[in-house]
Length: 136
Image (tube, rainbow, N blue to C red; front, side, top):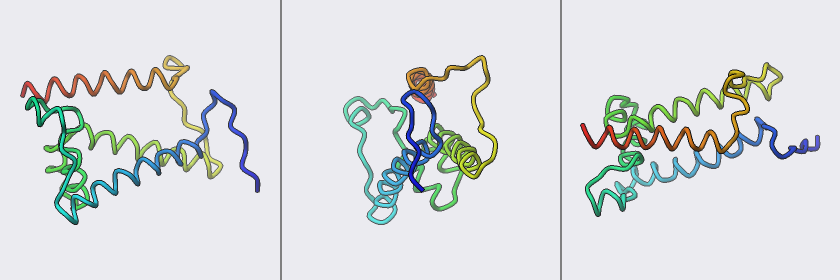
């Protein structure tokens, strides 16, 4: 069966899952290196200023999740834990759609949910998380 062409600007569950899988493999590789060798990626912002960025602790959080320790993962980086849960829900919805089930889309008041709007929303959430985690 030939793959269907994706029209620019339209959503494709198959393409979204492919991109999510590639991103997940990269993250799993980094977390795996941390678990096996005990090394992680140092944060340049934290190293130079002592300020934690939104990604600080993500490698340790992923390692804790691999060990099944949700509380430790949450303490290392709650944003990663929430992000992974949202990604898992999206993946399930897209798999259901690819299997012939209903397509799950954002509520009408959020449409069109463009990629740029999504990036802005993620950036705002990450900035708020960064400020809050450095104040507490």
